[in-house]
Amino acid sequence: MKAPDFTVAERWAQVRCAKAQEPADLIVRSCQIVNVYSREVHPGDIAIKDGIIVAIREGFSGEAVRILDGAGRFAVPGIVISHGLPESRAAPSSGEGRVGLASGATSVVRDVTAGEGDPPRELPQRQWTATRLGLSITSQAPACARSADEVLTSLRSGYPTFLGPGPAQGSASLILRQLWDKGVDIRRICLGRWDPGDGGMEAAVRLARAVIADCGGIGLAPAEACAMATLNPAIVFGLDHRVGSIAPGRFADFWLTEDLGSHAEVEVILGGRPADSQAPR
Image 1 (cartoon, rainbow, N blue to C red):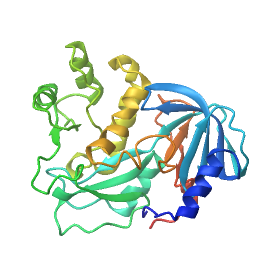
Image 2 (image 1 turned 180 degrees about the horizontal axis):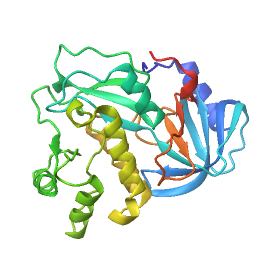
Image 3 (image 1 turned 135 degrees about the horizontal axis):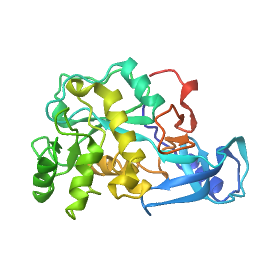
Image 4 (image 1 turned 135 degrees about the vertical axis):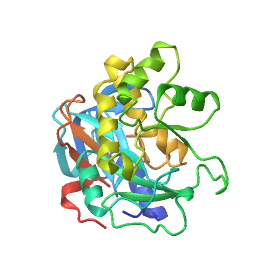
């Protein structure tokens, strides 16, 4: 899914919509917004114009072409999946992409370290090629840790760290709890590393959802756990002005769920439209 470029007139229309001076394309009413910037869950409506979030406000007074009742459900930013980290190979298949999207993965990042011979695939998600905040192709790659010791070594060295535990190291939640009990600040760790040897995109999304579900047992607030799979990787790859949060100016990519602790399928909004109504592209 390509990121659109907006004209000046379209940007002004988005501003007028944010001021409730003209109708939005979609307003999702009565959500519990998982805010990864303030690290809280708060009530609000989400107003969307041209696929962009223009306002998050409780009792938003504007009108819209379409109204979706959030019915008190949690609105969670779309999960950001990376497939360009060391040891990764070909990009996910379109089938994997559809499975991941149904569970809330709305962006797939191809880092420059993935190699020139790996072209973009036909995925339903947004696809990005990131250079990690403009650094060159030879700059340090994010670290991939599989145990508490590996995570700690990486954090001490200042590396962006993706957690992708193998079968012998215990669950991600257990590793994070071990580090939290030691007083380590784990809130800069990233989730969402795609690797075919670890079960592909489905496993990456399942790990992220499991950490969100287990946040209380780990010692994190729900929004802090969500940030590990959304805002944190977006920051690593220089995409946080576009994706990784529910905030004005970002793409309207998020999912709605009645229970953050549930692993059931969720209602996904991609670019301001229900994801199940969009053909892969």
